[in-house]
Length: 172
Image (cartoon, rainbow, N blue to C red):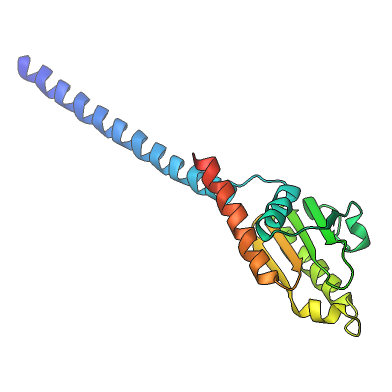
């Protein structure tokens, strides 16, 4: 009888260990998947926060917020959830910074087309043609940045810095 109890206890212990290990493995896998999804969407700045951060890092002054962005970009409805656009007040040297927050990844190509159309509409015979050469578009999902400035590449680097700093501060 004692040997039967030993066998039964041994079997129960083995089954318990298998169940515990299985549940642990499932929880670890779920945790890793959730962590990957969180990393993809861990930045939650508004478009205005992004543009303001860039302007501070670039020491841009005399930029004015544009509230009627539809005047510049023809963005189809339900493509972006937020946007901000600032344009320089100085004549002669044009600086434009626009940031869009995509609603979903499927909206990327639609927004890219609207941005391309806007940049192509700039009249190549005007003084904006030199600026058009200095335009940059950068994507860091869900954010899309458009910069038209003499130092557009530096502004794109500032964009990445703003997003990285936001990510790092949210990790702490």
